[in-house]
Length: 171
Image (cartoon, rainbow, N blue to C red; front, side):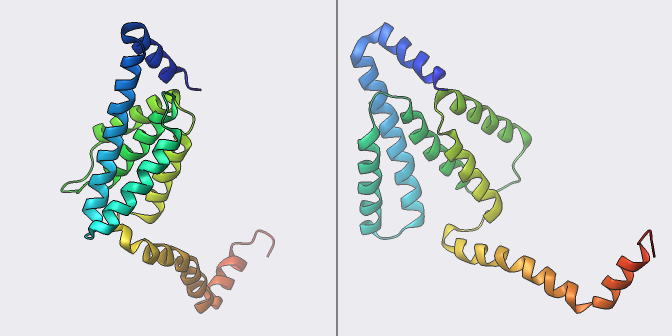
């Protein structure tokens, strides 16, 4: 399930030894941190928030940031969040979705935690393109929608009853 990253790491080691692996790990870590930094700066105004989030991010990454396939997932989550957070000036076209699908295929062959990216994408599909600060309002809106449908259904019980009885095969 991690064959692609293992092939990549083996190729790097064959061509450059341990220093090549170390440089690759450093580049991936810096790219991941830069993407997280950009996201935090875009959504938070306080330097205290920027610093706190970055300290937590770097601490979480440092614990598992060895020359191992999970570095692909760290970068994959950061890239996915940056893509979902991009400003939208025009509708997304199919080539963009093809690139995202190809990225997920690569990620799935590089590390098994691609499921985290699928979960993030699913949450984004459910919650929509709203500002993350309004996510609670979005969840509340979706939670109320079945109740709205149920209340609308009960507001017209005679039409619901007549429709079900008229379509019955045995009536």
